[in-house]
Image 1 (cartoon, rainbow, N blue to C red):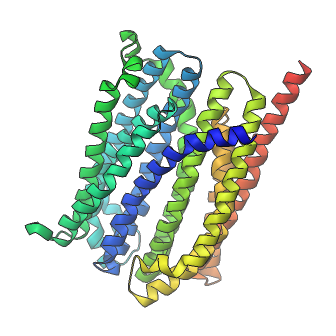
Image 2 (cartoon, rainbow, N blue to C red; image 1 turned 90 degrees about the vertical axis):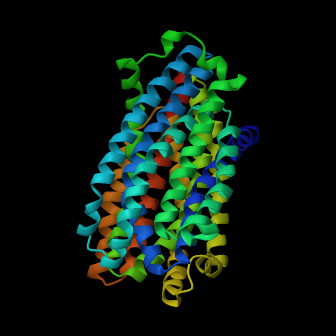
Image 3 (cartoon, rainbow, N blue to C red; image 1 turned 60 degrees about the vertical axis):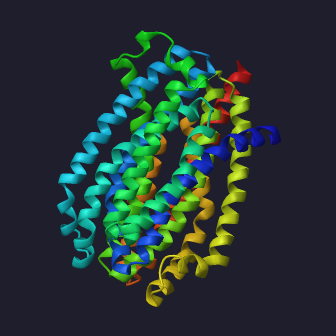
Length: 447
């Protein structure tokens, strides 16, 4: 078990660093925008809450690329590795165009969400720029899933880390108007994100087509680079349920932000601070989940359920330890974390309290996201999607809204609802995975 845990950890480290770099782009934008005013911070939060729902929906589709790449890579089938990449990138490009155009022309929806009018006026132009940035963002993540599926995880990690100073520099120029550039404030943050996402996607494309470790997959069998209905169905069969899973979770957090925005701009800004920090720990969970899922998919391609069991148990232990560490860090450093984003005392006070609630759900969050990854690795996506739907949309959001408005608990009530949903999801997804493993091990032993 120790051996499998170390193997998962080694694969996870580059993925985690890449995920951390991605979320750090958002945290940097949030922190730098927060220096302008809490209204700008609220506008950034409103945009993120609305645009992240379709963005995560698109990103969820990319998960199938990693799964199918890992599956056929495990079988040493280079032709299908290349074939599924081509068809997967076509699906993601089409989805990205539809989502971006829809968001750009649907930006007026922000006026109907009962938010602070000043916040909405600031958010609209930023929202439009961020809509277009979804295209290079989704395409980069899709290509990253391909390189991760081949277990060449360092490539995307290096690019994502290199993007950080680029984004900081562009923010410094465009948000605050340094070196003679116009002071664009929130709009400047949007342009910085768009330019950074486009740049790292173009570089990753060049690496995949030029570097020797990838060329062997790209050049094999020209017929592999053709659209195929059956292949597209295979990708969507995994991609759509996986997309629904991550969207329902991220969507629940996004909707919670919209609901909190109806309370006050202060509550929305505090929520954005706590959620941004929680999102940082979540992407580390996602990185571990992704690595475990890839290794599970590889073992699944060989029908090796003993190895799947070891990967699952060792991975779960590793993630629980991480969840406990994240919980303690939230409790110990909550004042310091909140102070990074705002100097407004009222916003800081509420954000510090919400970080205590965020600390509570760190362990169930890490358990549920890794259980979902393990289940994707064994191609079990439909029942887990139902479990996630119940957790967030029947338990978390209704309970949170009830506590927030009927019992007058405000933002606190919404976060308590999220804790309940995460706890439900973690219990039943974990039970589902180990139940499937036990059944298949018994079947192999009996056979």
